[in-house]
Image 1 (cartoon, helix red, strand yellow):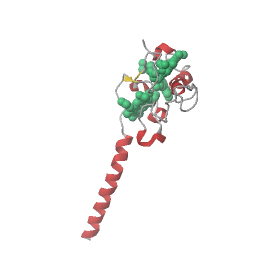
Image 2: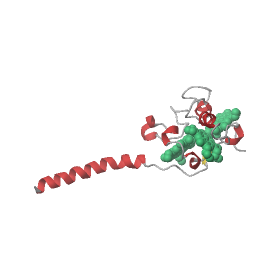
Image 3: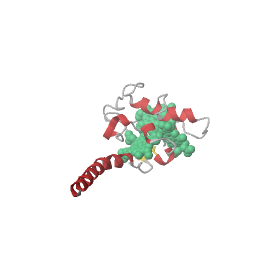
Image 4: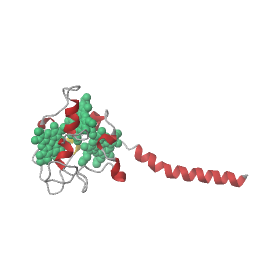
Length: 132
Ligand code: HEC
Ligand code: HEC
Ligand code: HEC
């Protein structure tokens, strides 16, 4: 009787220890506004660098922008090698430019254009994101 109780407690403690990190990862908080974005290594910015505000994007789920497939690296910078670090290509998955201006729901401009009718003030002009 006593032994099975000890076993139960041990199993419960183990399960807790295993689940806790998953919970912590899922509960990751979005960083403060004004997050300074940058260009990949070796690319000189031609436009004023974008500062991103998470607080204006709470309508979207984290995974609408961040990629689950990156696993532990889910919140790594977009310009991480192997992600969107191709500075030459203007299109394609690894293109740095396309990640933000591509015609798809995950890119900044792609999502903004899709929502323009419902939200006329949503920025689609260059200097509304690349603030001088
Ligand atoms: C909805 C926001 C948004 C809009 C609108 C937007 N961009 Fe960007 N752009 C970004 C983000 C984010 C990056 C990546 C971070 C950075 O470079 O500041 C970027 C990067 C770039 C880059 C590569 C880095 C550099 O500075 O050379 C160029 C070129 C660029 N944008 C041009 C444009 C042009 C031209 C327009 C207008 C036709 C435009 N962007 C409109 C968000 C936007
Ligand atoms: C609309 C798109 C979008 C949404 C939604 C979004 N993020 Fe982000 N997040 C970004 C961008 C863009 C960056 C900057 C990436 C870079 O610097 O290359 C970023 C960066 C981060 C970072 C890294 C901060 C740092 O200092 O390096 C964390 C952590 C993060 N986001 C967490 C979250 C969480 C948690 C959520 C959901 C509650 C979330 N984000 C929702 C676009 C988004
Ligand atoms: C999934 C859709 C979606 C994506 C992806 C997205 N946005 Fe937005 N963004 C929105 C919506 C919706 C609003 C309007 C929020 C409101 O109603 O105020 C917005 C508002 C903004 C604004 C105006 C508010 C402010 O922060 O000054 C900027 C700038 C902006 N987004 C930049 C970006 C950049 C840069 C990216 C990519 C790194 C991005 N957005 C990606 C949906 C998106």
